[in-house]
Image 1 (cartoon, rainbow, N blue to C red):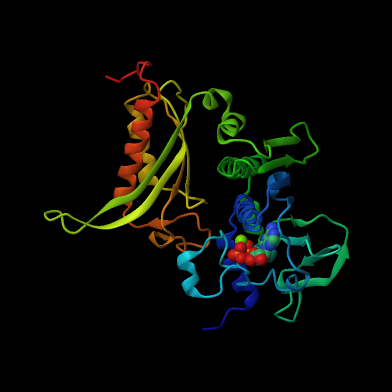
Image 2 (cartoon, rainbow, N blue to C red):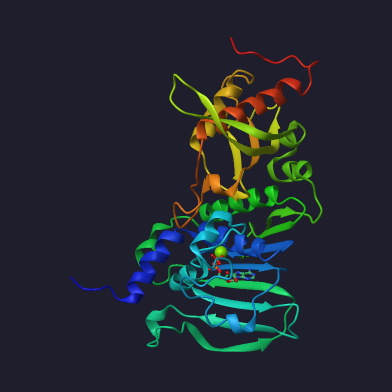
Length: 367
Ligand code: ADP
Ligand code: MG
């Protein structure tokens, strides 16, 4: 048995967090939001495999921090394990930038409000250097720049040839990034998001754009088409005491209560689309929940023509201690307590919204 070389360990770990360009974009968008940004722009070449650049107007990174920002487990957001219980930022593991820098060429240009100029630094995969605790390529140099941060990622997976080869189509990767951006843009309505395709061909241009100060409804129209935007109804429910059943099936005791809110927009029964568009955020994190997705799709089957599906955007808030976000490095999957009760409650609210949206409309009921 031999201990693995640190470079190998890092590259393996990086592959878990960053599986494709869209994961890198998600991590970096979350960093921009954590930094309080209101304008986020992503530019791509070859679906992010050649170039992936993200600029924000957030609080920036201090010059002193630039040396360690790309090392594993360096973060400004978590200090102790117990902080995880009440974590309010997206990040906490300090792994994203480190991971990206292990599998790509990364450059950061950043400026805080207290700094007279911006600073720029490039980072290397530690393979090329001998000192373990230094990933910096050259010095941190002063440069011109606005307050905020710009991160440039070039040649993703250049040192992981098998992964690199697995990407067949740049446009598929672009689409996956556009999908992530679209979801964050809608959830963070009011902030501006722009996705730009920089390839030198006819498809170049802006593929996602939302404006500063725009509303959810406007953005649903912009991002998902006016046919969807016209037919959405609001779900807005606050449950100060969601009753959680605790105990065995014979003797149900209501022993636990949590504050639980459901917000969002769903299409009414007049709108039917080919594919179920389901956007779910729990405590502002973009997550997947198959149980809830299935429940909602089957709920709509009663109201929509055969083969038709809805658009559903939901944002749930529950106490952070009901949620386990630390299931996987991608933080994509979350586990929450009392899943059954939560799903039931969401179903009920969506159905109530559907029924109340316009009583004069006659619903198409499937026989
Ligand atoms: P985490 O988000 O888990 O802390 P990351 O590797 O994503 O870890 O980022 C490391 C640190 O770099 C963050 O804690 C933050 O201090 C800083 N950082 C990264 N991106 C930005 C950004 N866009 N604006 C300001 N600071 C940033
Ligand atoms: Mg992060």
